[in-house]
Length: 188
Ligand SMILES: [Cu+2]
Image 1 (cartoon, rainbow, N blue to C red):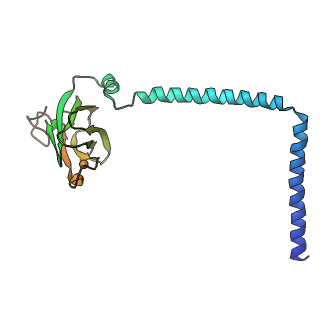
Image 2 (tube, rainbow, N blue to C red):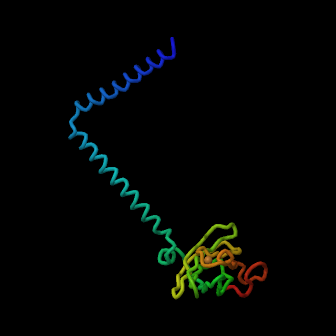
Image 3 (spheres, rainbow, N blue to C red):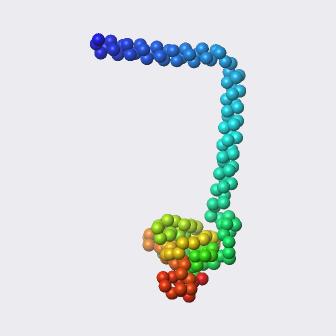
């Protein structure tokens, strides 16, 4: 059999399948009225909407407790927070104090004396653990628990000038009251 014949037969078979599909749809359409289909579709839509609404509301309620806002955090953290005043300035950070305990919540009061800066805290593994904005004439509060002792690094996350990429500062968490590898007596 020549290739031409084979293509011709394949075409006829596929065209027959297509025609059978259309015919079956056309016959089905005659069996049921549109009213029944609309009713069923409406029912599916209603339950789909209710399901999505439920998922949305539950997700919203759960994720609200993860928000980094002070009111949400203060409800989760126990103990009196240690206040740390943070001042940003092109191109550096001033922290007072810069040695912090690991067993108390920390309240960073963050402001800037020149332009906007991004205040982001990174742990030793390079993961970001907290973030807020440093804004001139305004103090943003970041309430956070840093329970893992170690050296944390603040990086500026907002392009603030030519020295932006060098704008970093470290601080220590843990080791309070000891002189070995911690804050020693200067711990807050
Ligand atoms: Cu910057």
